[in-house]
Length: 148
Image (cartoon, rainbow, N blue to C red; front, side):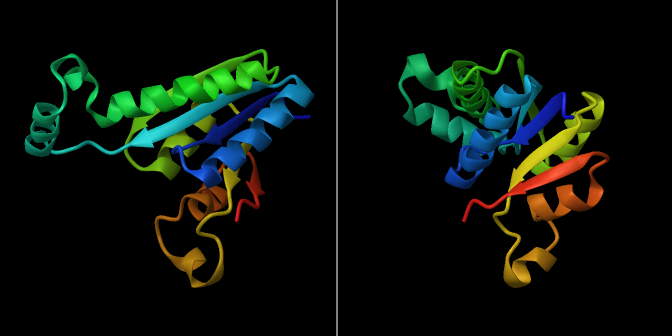
């Protein structure tokens, strides 16, 4: 059966639904859970502008990498609280689908769990749809969770 499950999250409600399903599976199967989140770099001028507006003590935290790390800490905590014994997290810069596919391969995951957002109607033909790209390029099984 599945010994290593990967789920991607971006903090959205639909991603949280996929996370919950992955947590449920990992806990029930006593599988290792890998949680991945991707982020895009922000242009330096915009980042400096946002930092100036924030309180001095919080300025260091205003960047996409730290936002993703905070999201992953919450997701990991939720998984551990639900009984998953082994949880690893990965923050990757770049495209979300590529991050999921790369980490799944690196960690030799047996199953990738993604939400179905973007898989309905004409949208499924658009390049860049995370569930579409993952389902077509994964080297392991993919579970597409109905989240909408």
